[in-house]
Length: 262
Image (cartoon, rainbow, N blue to C red; front, side):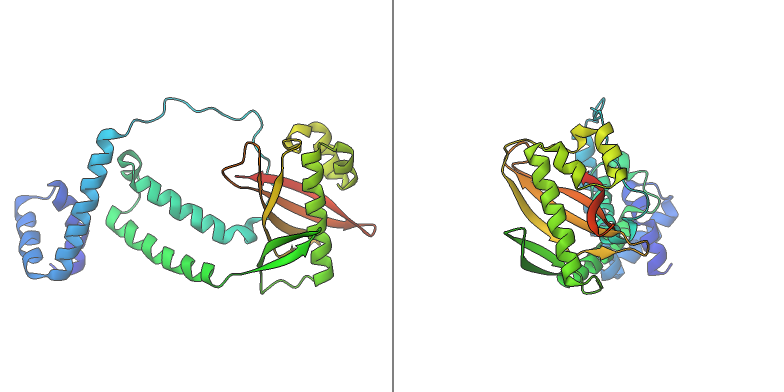
């Protein structure tokens, strides 16, 4: 048997699921191959950790479902969220490995899944390292802006979009529904009328603009912007994000959509 075949059998070998003859072949190979021996030790350690977690894991019996789930705009955000989705997937995959009941449902062996996650992590780390954050004066505040070297939005248009988003957030915390309506398109006004509580924030709370992204422009003329926020109320120990879609209508910059993410 070659090394690849041995590694395919490692988990079954650790669990004692191999037949006696095949287990003996694997054992003989591990004694003579340091590389496969190291892979065996890693697999054995991982499975041992999963077993210990399994003994203490107690699944929740029920969930509390929010009364109004945040709405998402169809399709427009997909291309901007590629890196975020990859990060979330990696995080969920690691979480799955930490819970045996979920780990057993993975479509490939655990050790191979770990190898893939390690490779993906290296790729994502390289992408993150290439990002540049610059302090910019927006709406009278110094705000960290994640620069996008590929954006082709003119600086004056980007600033106008970012200023509008900042004004919109401030109106949310002021509870000023009239100002929100005035800054929105017909689409947003209709949603605001139907779901005003989705737009209002803790009135009187101090809000911090923790981060913004450069503005991106889609083919249909929609400007996209992420804004990371933190306030002194219920979000005092964590940040949340508002996703803006902004359009220029009859010479005015207007919010067409606003969705919130944790």
